[in-house]
Image (cartoon, rainbow, N blue to C red; front, side, top):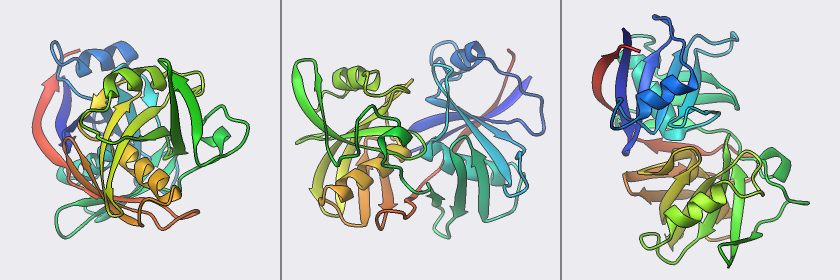
Length: 275
């Protein structure tokens, strides 16, 4: 039997598995089965807690989308990861360093019960996102479904494109998100954010996540939206991002500085699986 914990960060839900104290060998089909909301547990992503490969980290953090693909980053998952390792007695530390495929993350438990994640320094160069563009630009044009659109792009350990919309509630997230996620501009696909700016300190955001579809919250997507909005001169360095599942606080003081994300992480239930 495989022991797991169901968790969520603002409704972005996860199956979290301790791969330190039990043997775990999951293929893509296993992940898809677990993530299936009708025949499995149901989740947006499956998270594995592993021993670190190096000496400069406490754990290794692996992320699998519902379609079975492994990705490098998930901000809401990182907050749940931090709560999981404390609740499961894997560490008593308040500040936790974890390895990911895109580098190290620093996770910090706050006195108010929230978790802050240092998401690292955003990458803007097209080759690092990756984005097929000749040169870096604040805005990139694209034509989708007969519409001429403009987006900003950044990597927060994973590729993001952000579009400015008048109203996030009525934005065609499902249709345009699905088309843009797999657009030829993005060789590794991309997460697509639809951002409505309310004022310089607050936005509304919906995100179509690659390999998942629209989720109730996307932590790295919230970071990317604030980075792009800041680069466009629309946002300050401290912004509250309202997602369908709740609110995140994002702080970014500009180029060459890390993005800090603060928000909740909730344990829903413990369970066991027979694969």
